[in-house]
Structure formats: C-alpha cells, structure tokens
Image (cartoon, rainbow over all chains, first blue to last red; front, top):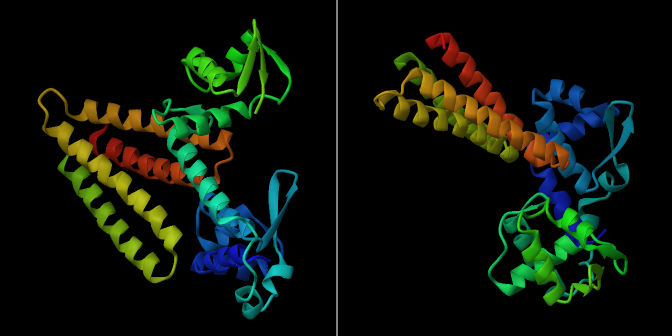
Length: 183
Length: 112
C-alpha cells in the first residue's frame, strides 16, 4: 500500500457514520437499503459513504440481482496502524502530479459532466478541454465530418469552432471531409 | 403565509441544531448533507418572503417557483444518475426531499 492510499484510509475512517458502517459489515455482508435502515440514513447517503469506503479499499462490493452487496476488505482492515503509517510514497513525479491535479480542476470547472459549459479563453485550459473531447475519438481511425459533428455537438453547440480548433491544435488531421485523431 | 414562514423558520433552526450535533459527533459528511437540506429551507423562505410581498405575486407565484425548483433539481438528479455520480445523487436527493417537505406543507397551509 502506498502512503497516498494509507492517507485515504485514515481520512475515510475519521467519520463516525463510516465507522458505524464498518461495525455493521463486521457482522456480515449487507446491501445499501439494510445499512440505511440500521443507521437511520437515506440510501443515497449510505451509497455516498460506501463509495468513499470502496475508494479507500476498505470495502468490497459485488452485484447480486438488483442489489449491490458490500463486505469488509479484511486484507486492508487487518493491517496495523503502524503498517499503514509506515507505507511508502507513490513513485510519481511531483510535476506530473501537479499537472494532473490542474487538468482535473480545469475539467471540473469547464465541464458539466459530458457537456462543455464554455470554451476557455486561455489556450492551456482550452487544450485540456479539447484533449478531453478527443478521448471520444479512436486514435488513427478515419471519421467522416458528419460523424465528427455528431460526436461533438452533444458536448458543445458550436461544434464547428471546436472541430476547427482541434485541427489547428494538431489534435485532428483533416483530409477533405475526413478526419483522423493524431493525439 | 405567516404560518408557512414560521414553519420554515423552525425547520432552519432544527437544521442548524442538527448540523452542530452531527459535527460534534464526528459525522462531517452527514453534517454537510444537513447543511444542504437547511439551505433549501432557507432558499424557500427567502423566495416565499420576497414573492409574498410583491404586488400581484403571492401564493400562486410561490407555488410556481417551488414547482420550478422541483423541475430543475429533478433534472439535475437524473443527470447525476446517468453519470453514476454517487455524490451528486446524494446531494440532489437531499435537496428534493427537503423541497417535497416544503411543498407538502405549503399546500397544507395555503390549499394551493
């Protein structure tokens, strides 16, 4: 386990509702509605807590018909506090980490889920948004202009501007009415 | 109308007490949901007060505004569900649950 994951575990556990969920799951597997009833929380609030517990690796889930059944991940929970505290930092370049955090921040500011709110004025931000849109296209595959428009238009109404900008930024290569994603 | 505003006042007071209790109990995230809920009562109180005082507005205008909230937040909930946004779903459901409570009480008091 990395230091980053250990930190996630500690943050996740510093909440009384989540500790109560862990106590309940210690008695056996449970699904959201049952936990909600036991803890007097709404099912959506329990789901919110379960997502945090799952992201921290403390809980495992599996689908069973209409329900998601949760159980404790004892491999993580049975580690000693010292083992968690002494875990090593992830070997990721600091600069890379900062850039990814910035990218996520820009995406959060300019996208409402899959819809682009506005084209950023700043070129760096604009590129991040266009790269995100480009993820909808397969690398190297040839797309007809109509297809390109159909993919971009649900993301942003002025799809022509985006399509043109993506060509000038070198994301698309255009040959007549055919487009290929380069990066 | 005064009875309705008094009801909203009491829900806001209860909400504030709940936020304090949950925070003291080490339930920060649940306290945040209580804040969202309390904020909805607050927004509804502000809107109701404003529209109640506006000439030509009144009960029908308040009912229409509450309905608009329901449509907007209902759409936001659907969007969150479509994208599997667990946090968004919890927030929008909390908002809608508080709004439904407000609408039910508003109808009871005004007969609208």
